[in-house]
Amino acid sequence: MTNPQDFTKYMSDMMGSFPVDTSAMSEAFKTQAAFAEKLSRVALNAAEQSAEISHKWTRETLTKMGPVAQVKDEPADYAKSVTDFASASAEVAAENMAAFAEVAKKVQMETVELMMAAGKEAQEDATAAVKKATADATTATKKAATAK
Image (tube, rainbow, N blue to C red; front, side, top):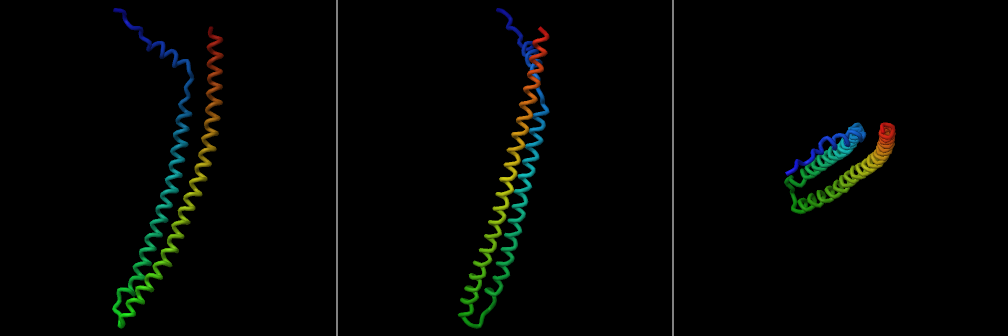
């Protein structure tokens, strides 16, 4: 039985002749991490604003619930307090839903801006990487041609 050839040296020599620039990968990682940080900041700000709106809504609802829980002199006063509470709750709900909509609108605008900026930056990075790779390949080809 014959010994199989060891292609390790051939592969090592072949891979060594190709220029590999790991700085492009490093820069891509840094760019991606910065983009993720900005998106996270947008999401966390939106969550914080939403929590504040919810908290405010809850406090307003509980405050408006006080008169409903009080003892009334007339049975009709109970119906009136419930009706007043329902009207006030509807008004507060409309205000808070508008506030939530504003938060969502802001998040959408900021996300679109980030995506556009990231796309532009990625295109610039890709163009620079291709130019550098082309230059490195041309240099390697010239070196290989003169070495013969």
